[in-house]
Image 1 (cartoon, rainbow, N blue to C red):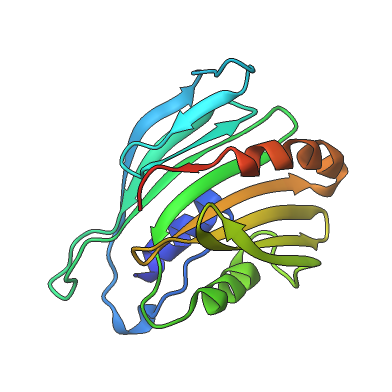
Image 2 (tube, rainbow, N blue to C red):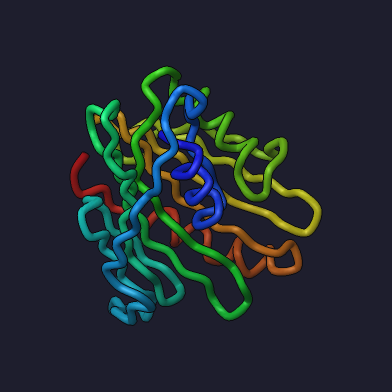
Length: 194
């Protein structure tokens, strides 16, 4: 993946993707917006977000956008990489997102999680790290805090060399409100196909 693609992902999703960008040409990623501020609610009043093309759905406590980011094709690229994203922010500024993206082929899932944790917002050393199974997939849940920003993130290793990143990013003044939504948000993720 290119530095531009990774940089855009950091800015949009408060996370980053491991990359060997030095040896690759610069390319401009393309974003396709499928829905903006979608208001589709489920029976409980939360918003039902089904990714367009990402084969996953999740419930969010706020309106959401659904988009795909595609790295532009290059002569050296054998395959065009895509990331599938749903996410939104509530009135308190708490950000909820789920991203399905390709894993770098030159590292393990645990290495990817470690690198993404140090590059994500908030960056820093995890205060909590929990390995578990989600559905039948390996997952690692991480809690980080730095200065006035905190985050709850779940990384899920998929069978087809993809990873799901499900995250809540919040101002530490709103940690209680973010934590109140966390269990429901994280447990609502449905992986519809790898």
